[in-house]
Length: 201
Image (cartoon, rainbow, N blue to C red; front, top):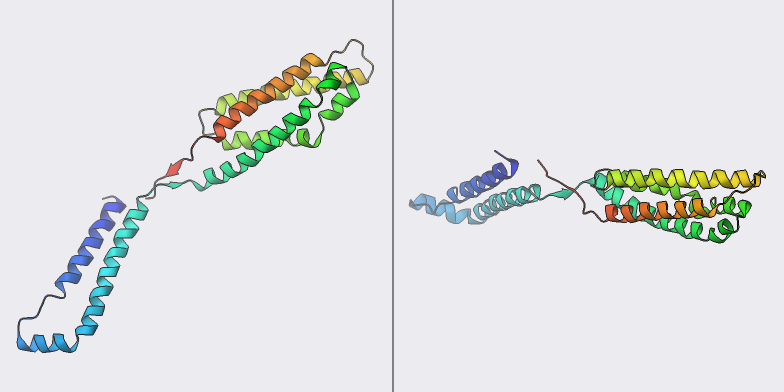
């Protein structure tokens, strides 16, 4: 028998027992005793009735699905991580002018702005929060694409700083922005997925 059914039956049995224990007496002696101890008997009856009601309430509560605690924690962390990735994207977009002008030093510096410094960590938080969602694989693939793009952009900027000729940054910059935006779009869908529930047993 499931816990809910067992607790419901127990509550009903307790209530029936309480009712049976207080059937009106038929003999004169019983009437006298009942009259003498009416207050005490009524109190005990209230106790039994309260206990039965409590058991029933516990059974109802036990049958109600609750959000998984790990899911709640991940949801809170994911909301903060989303804001962090958006800050990183804004910082990255500020670097467009330098990439278009092949300003290697400023482009490399832009990749290390406060927002961009935290972007990978925030991406990993979002991947952790969405690992049980339908978007999990897409989220990982888009993150991998972003990492490859930004590492190539950073590498190209380094080559330019060291004096290698004809290093164009704008193509790799555009690929990096596109990859991060794709990751962010998927991450927002993943974070919007309703909390999973757990059944108490």
